[in-house]
Image 1: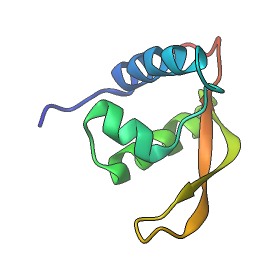
Image 2: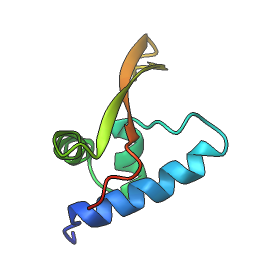
Image 3: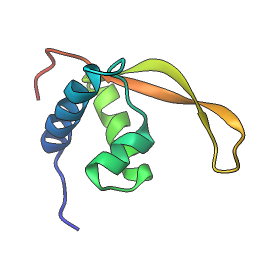
Length: 86
């Protein structure tokens, strides 16, 4: 699997978020980012953590979803901080 750089990840993240903002609130979960970028969820979480530490992504709240067994739960959501350069 090709390695994705942080800058490539953030560029793709911003593109996806821009598309989502048209219909939604512009936030994303680690699961959504993993699926959109074609990486596993653990790697998406690692990248999100790195971007949060750099001040490029921020925790945005929690979104209600259902677990695989159908039980409702809340998952963290994140937002790209506009204007933060790579």
